[in-house]
Length: 259
Image 1 (cartoon, rainbow, N blue to C red):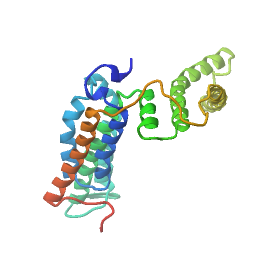
Image 2 (cartoon, one colour):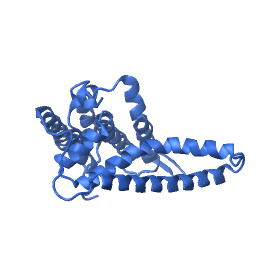
Image 3 (spheres, rainbow, N blue to C red):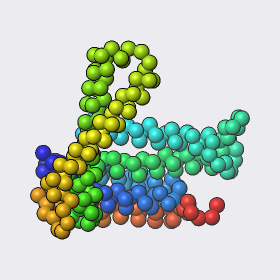
Image 4 (cartoon, rainbow, N blue to C red):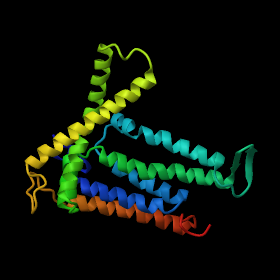
């Protein structure tokens, strides 16, 4: 069942609206480096994340890379980032200052504020629904969209092919030694198998007139509704409020501005 056929309201929204909302939130946070805008955006995103339709276990599993990457980024910037203000600690190549700590906090919050809505909103997106929306609403070339969708559908087969190759090599007695050499050989074999499968899939799609000229029909029409518009307005409001708060307190620091 498609995620749009059941579940919470946000999960049923059009994938194009989710993509647009994620971009509207991310773009202002990318062009500025300050803790206020990222913190305000992260705080305003909480209701949106709670309505996304993910259980707590699924939420933590999907966002685990962010919870690992954000502190790692902050620690790296705090220890080796540009220094300014009072120097707090210095040893060899490590220099911790008030400026580097402020920059580390801003980077930590910014990674979460940009990554969380993107990961959580897209966790309930069906690839077919996304392809329908990109081709029918965004008006991307159907040939490109359908080809990308077919490729995404094939990604799940790579793990099964790798497992089958490992079992086949072990059955022939060529997988007992040389782990690095075995991995390189299996990677090459998997690459060749992927090319062959892609060629067969392309031929099958051409035989079914997927690349025919002229307007094409769609099995599932993709349309925008009020809820989709509300989600995009919410994304715009989050980014606008975050930037306004940063400008109001004087912490707005565009990355393309003067040093």
